[in-house]
Amino acid sequence: MVNKEFFFKGFKSILAPDSPALALGCCFIAIGALLKNLGFNIQESIFSTMLTYALPGSLVMAESLLVGASLLNIFLAVWFVNARLYPMAVSLFPLMMHESQPRWKYYFSCHFIAVSAWLIMKSKYKEIDKKFRIDFWIGIGCATWATAVIGTFIGFYASDYLDKNMMMGLAILNPIYFLCMMVGAMKTIQIAASVVLGLLLGPIFYFLSPEWSILLGGLVGGTIAYLIGELNVN
Amino acid sequence: MSTNIVLAILVTSLATFSSRLLGAISSEGIKETSKLFRYFNCLAYSTLAALIARTIIFPVGVLSDASYLSRATVVLFCLFIFFISKRNFVYPTVISAIMMALLSGYL
Image (cartoon, rainbow over all chains, first blue to last red; front, top):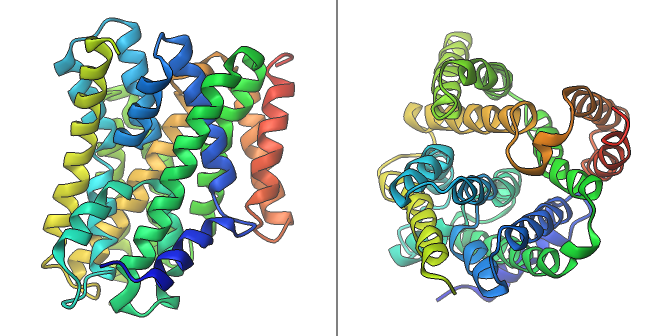
């Protein structure tokens, strides 16, 4: 089963002063308020955050419902936005793989792949023995997931008291936090080039195709950054 | 719960979970020291950066009602705060919300 010591160590990591819990919670407060305004009830709002647990995907679903999109359209729109989770998983799970750990832990905990948990794990994995990294990860994932659910709950009931300016303030928190974390992670030439190229190419590709812009920006920017890094090493 | 919304939530979660599960399955044979791992690491950081840039420049939801000028001012000022506060994540994050709420009425 899950090692309790490392699980709680991971769970407590979101209590650190520089953890993303505040930004994550505030953004899900905005999501909770948005879902209520769209006509979701409290069960549907909580159900949505628990099952999806990805901010951009939830936003896209909400916008799609608003314009009356079909289920297939919603699936494709969300898939395009959340396809970033694939490279995120591939660049995280090899750090946690250990032969003594059962596979179900990895398949179960992949639900926790999200920017906030991913960035915490990327910055802390070296401090944890490889055998127990998956337990530490499950702890981080449960904590960030619970934060998102609580944020949605608060947002749903606080929506009547939040005006548009306050909602905008809550909505900008997460991108700013992630931007600072990404800039803070630029410690090697490959990562620095990846971040800078992604920031530039994402919006540029938006003019070619809004749906594909994130994937294309990430693919082209990441590939160029990888080649720059490899050439630099050679 | 209305069926329409529940189905939309299920479809959304399926679209999201499929990327996560595929990533977990296909990472099984990849070593953390391999070139393939480094390549996917670059892809992940670059894709996240593209997502953040898109969220700020071409947002969906309530943020799309804020002007470009107000968003650009908040981003640049918060990055400035981030660097002068010795890369503290909390100050720029808290300041961004307050600034955005204040500026959105004026800019």
